[in-house]
Image 1 (cartoon, one colour):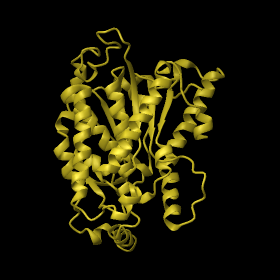
Image 2 (cartoon, one colour; image 1 turned 180 degrees about the horizontal axis):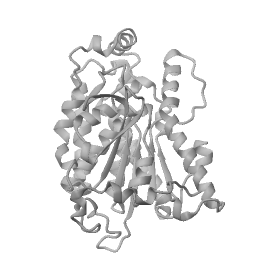
Image 3 (cartoon, helix red, strand yellow; image 1 turned 135 degrees about the vertical axis):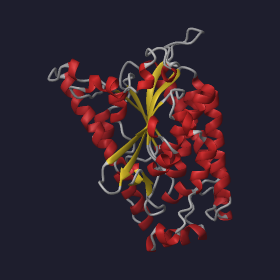
Length: 381
């Protein structure tokens, strides 16, 4: 089933959001769009897509693997990325790498970023035990440090157990990304990072012009672990509460109709959760997938109106939805593994992401820019 949406005035959204800087360039000459040429010198057709990246802590290394394979392929151009939490970190790092050195630069920058994550974690207490390493257990649930930390986070707020608001991710981000480059016309990718406004409960979308390390940290700010991130007098928590990730910025602001959602939070589980940690993990998965499922319901509804002739095509836009899922990998992992930044585990997820993306490209590349490659009603409704 092909997919969807815009409102009656959506056709004017791109023009309304164009900056003064962009008006100085014809569309085909602007540096932010210079890579979208539709083909390579060797005649291979290049297809433009948009990416929607979920959050999920260390499980974001799966998304790194997917991005690594897509960037390596040479037939894919990324017009825009909408992302939340760990997805937001992958998004800004990949976009910065593209701005600096094209696909090869993005692959290198992503590798360096995740190495820095692992190195930072190696200096902390949250480590797999020797028994975990021997048995191949990817979780941290047997780690004394994790057990202590988990208990403290249930009894105390981060304002109590982390009064200085130390967040090692801030240093890693600022070492990995020159955010000024993302805020200029030199960035070839449109970025939309989501956070949740603590005061209003509304979604906040940070685009290229507003990107800072604080915006990325706001998108990934779990309120039980970190202080709310203050930006311009407002405080923000993890964007996953409102959008994981948001699809609407890709609908209203992008030329490509293709949206590839990279799932790292399982939509379904066959086994009933029974332990306290399993129940909490499933609650988090359901709540962090709920906003995406609502958007997909709207997409499905509008597509049906288009197909039935009840909505004029001039007033709506048919979107093409695709999905690359980590379910086969992450469904076997406990919630504690999202805090496991051991390099061996990150590479395990990265390699799984590469394999999954390669299989997806083999199966679906010819259908990109043509049709939706998933059954939206079966998967989301």
